[in-house]
Length: 121
Image (cartoon, rainbow, N blue to C red):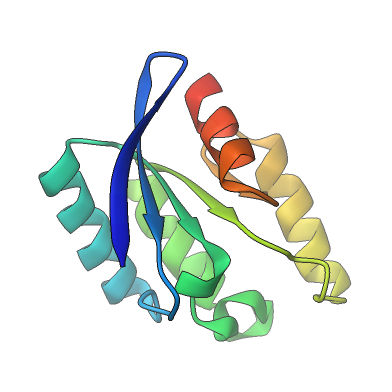
């Protein structure tokens, strides 16, 4: 896992990249969020899709809701970037669409787009 502090439009954002999943449940998400916040001072975070367990993208597991609720509860803005085109689930596509319309959680294709979204809100 590689963590960097990036700045976009005067906003500091913790950008994390990992080749393997480290967010697998609500507790691991919370532990990671608190560690990054403590180490970087950032309340805005982005991570590549590969860092999140694939079960997250199966909405019926409830994992996405559990994890994202932690970010909302702790007032941390969060963006996931990567290729979501392989997912054909209409509920997941709707979930991503609705998330992207909000101000706290985003799903985008590139890290640059994630930084842009997080720097505007």
